[in-house]
Length: 327
Image (cartoon, rainbow, N blue to C red; front, side, top):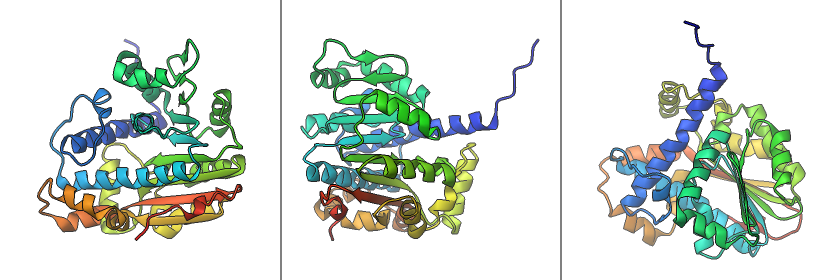
């Protein structure tokens, strides 16, 4: 019997990264089922909620979703939706459908992820009318481009690509009519940390070099040099998940430096403990009543080890550098 060829370490690592897409989606599905926030679309991507999640995990995802949404919505408001959004490593994210329902879609919303994840997402969209109908409603032509690894319509596009291959990424974005002169927001959540610092720096430098007016919002780990951070790294390594970019996650300053050294005009960063404290307190009070939290210290440690960093290049002087969290 012929032996199977060995699987390259990089293939194993990429598969482990792809599995984090399911982890995040299942956690978001569970948190919404408990009433932390409303997402009527995630059920069509994730049927099973899996085992019960700890309250601190639910609150952590709440802070992540609300924090990212706050900055995204502020960008859309500042540009009056005359812009583009590019969600890097989007996974099974449902933001396009939320924006469509709220009538705040940008000119075009792009998503990029591994071709295998993109194929799964396209399958869900094709086979579930609550997902396909909003997409069709925003499309003027008789047919939209739909193949195994790409979907393109007037307002929504999903691209299968590897973010480490910038020339291929740029070629595909241009093929699907991205406009580099239009204000463009890039989103990434726990994506850059799986790339080497050199690879992620090349990516954010390419964005700053290519798009005239841009904002980049990055959510990922921070303060990873302490004991709690080391335990997080070991837990991921036990699943073959290597944080290749963890050196950039040492502090808020190291997070900001990645952007300041690659052509961005201004950069801000907050850990999620600070973001949690700046979210609307009325809603914080509501979600804190949903479940009893026994280990407040654990929640604080968790939130102190994630951050949102946002960088701006405002050639058109739209005032996007003023976007942030108000005390």
